[in-house]
Length: 238
Image 1 (cartoon, helix red, strand yellow):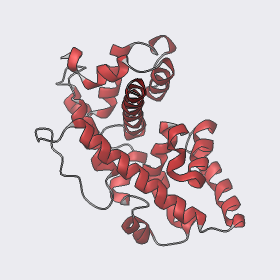
Image 2 (cartoon, one colour):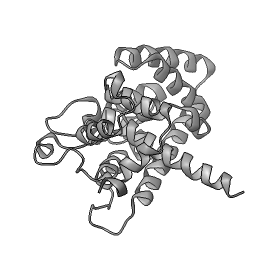
Image 3 (cartoon, one colour):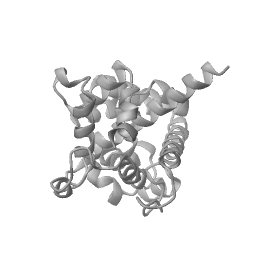
């Protein structure tokens, strides 16, 4: 199973920097940063339901189930996606859906950000930085997030996975209305943020649910690894 497992294959092809970034999100000990088996176990653990984890092998949770959960979480609008573990949809198809939703959300936020005056942007930026700092985000993630507000999808390549995942946090859902000066319902319907009902578990721990604050940024990084590998293959074929 391990030889054909997508998570193991991605981790084996990850760079040292990518493995370190994932390990830091998982809060692993530094001597485990290059331990692929440990990273796989911890990723599946935080992505799974804690009760079900008791009955699973540490490397048993399928990557497809993880990305279905993430796709449901990031789905634009209300409700869940139509993906199921035993359906015909491949993992790369679900990953594409996640990435498209990510790009759409960031562009919508950028459009609203661009409508603010320079003075409003400075005021909102200062408030965002203070609030994100209180939420425990690193200065690197905060700076990356602020840059994304101005650059849109063109900034995805250099943005940290944690900065990208902030767009889907319960925290961002709770402050978006005050940032953009419109109603929460308008923001949800336009796709800028997800429903607060769906967003809530990201910021507030609910017994047994996946740890989305770790699962989402790691999954985004897993997708970025696949994109990097594909780009490198294309360059070799030129």
